[in-house]
Image 1: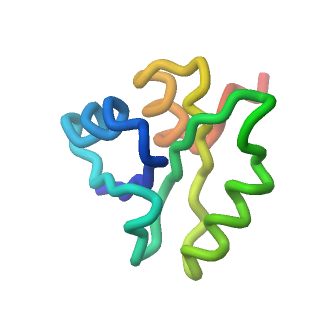
Image 2: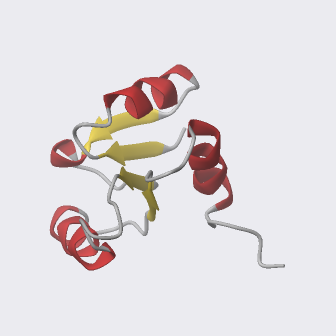
Length: 90
C-alpha cells in the first residue's frame, strides 16, 4: 500500500484516495517515508522549490513523486502516483 502525504485543505482528495485504498496523511504528520506528496499550487503560488524544501525537512529516506493537484482530477492524480510520471514521454 502506498503512503501519500497531502497538503492540508485538500480533504476531498484525501478522502477519495483513502476510499480507493491508499494510506494517506497530512504533510505535517509525516514521520515515515512516503511514496507521493499531493499539494495544490497555482503557477503564481507555491513553487516546486518551496515544496521540495518542505519535504527535505520532513523526510530523510524516500524519494516521493510530487503532484500538483491544480487542474487535475482524482483519476489524473492516481495515474501520476501509479506511473510516477505526469505524462507519456511520446
